[in-house]
Image (cartoon, rainbow, N blue to C red; front, side):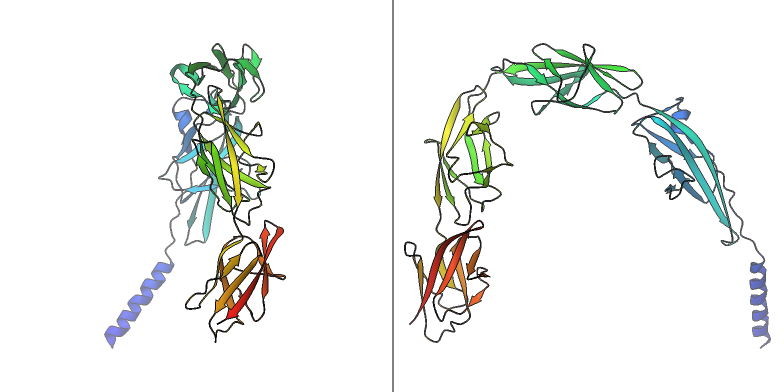
Length: 405
């Protein structure tokens, strides 16, 4: 018993002793160095990375870059938390002066004390960037070669070299000039029959020269249409191309509205596809019912060939049966009379038959009720009329009649 009392006394003593101990606090010190200054630069460069390296102390480290929404002291400002052992990456995309702040903090006395200190420096960012990111002529990106040359190749049938270049610069402060004339992307026209020298000036006035050169290659006479299919508005139809006779045979699903479909076309490299003498667009609807009957392919050497489109519209129904019946009945389809006759065995429950057909993939109704192929049950005690749609327009009506054998 004396041992138990002694143990309790020791435990109480330890608890009272620990209550008197005060947790030491790490003194917060927000000192740091910036790597661009360490490397001998006065200013940071726009678009270039540098690091902030803490040299002080603290339990928690938070960096405020000085960008909008990240300015220390402003309401709802957000900072980036990191560990002292890690350096923090900083990058500014535009020139200016930014208030960069490192906040360090520590807690002590088991959370009862909390100390925050900060250090703010103004970082001046200059933009010396003077490069092209993209240089494009006639939807072709130039090849950036050594010695700041931008190279293009064109077929040897090209005679007019007056083009406007579509370009972008790596800095919003940079500008491009040719013979002292400021260039406007997509607008300014130059004669590229001879090399053209572009001068790109940064916001700080530093310059970089680029020489744009064109060379030629023998123009190809190849002009083959390799793909013809229906896109949006169609139902996955693919035309069969008879290259020898230059004929495209297209069997369209009954549900496809050929008056407004998009075409998916492909042809030999470097060729142009013309529809009614206008450049083909994959985003445009075409009227294959009346307006478009041919497609022209123009080769690099300007020779051309024309394909004729022959369109057949499939019947709305090519097979008709009922789900779940064994053996499966085969509907007799009379496309001219627009009737379907189905023989079913005596004893079959004809009040809940589910139709299944092949053919149209579009909307089908009985009266005002939309039918889902292979899903919707119907009462065939009397003939039913199925209405097949072409796009959103009402098409053929087929009468389905059952014979009980």
